[in-house]
Length: 307
Image (cartoon, rainbow, N blue to C red; front, side):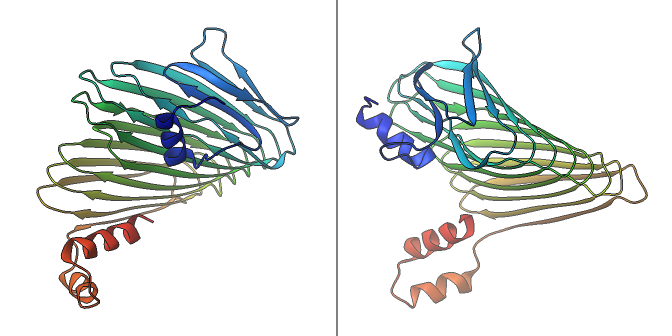
């Protein structure tokens, strides 16, 4: 691939791509696909209208990966991309996505990615999505991901949703429907600073007996930034659901957590935990006695919290 330095930097930040990619991949840059590769067991097909791709993982596929990162380097670009994933029965794959926007211009740049996952019976999937913004222009870096997960019986999905830094505005929407025996695990990590805003909305429907969901969101709001988390689990069967919001607030930051648990079955077991607070003074003091400055100690604590 013939990539410039900005593209290389963004791909490394959001997808750990540093050179050749193993397995199936589709790399999108400035509203165009610049590289694509399928494998024997994973096929990537562009949609006819050019608005995205379909990814087909054959039944029984084990130990393979798919990389589908997006980078934007031109100010003023706005796009909506639709990617559909069909995970075959008894497969076990990793999907690495994410978007990086470098905006050095005066106009807003925006990427809205709609990802739908159809996880077949007994299939396992790990999904990693990282968002990152850079550039010194006045235009905003806007990312609005929509993630839909439809899980068949006894399937498993693990999702790591990360906003690293530099994203000015984001609305993150996740919807999941689970059938019997399906399990969903989500780990979300958000960092906001300056005057950034981040809205994160989850609706998880536990529709089958023995379905389970474990959703944990960790956030750090610095400067004058704002975060809002709407997290809802609906228990429609003999199921188990757990949500947790754990946040650090700094400077003039603001955080609003809005948990919701809805039980429509007497056998639904749903639990929510939430904590918002500043960095403990004793943590800072302990690290500063080891020779760190206050700002260095704060960064060490935050990095550990979001790791």
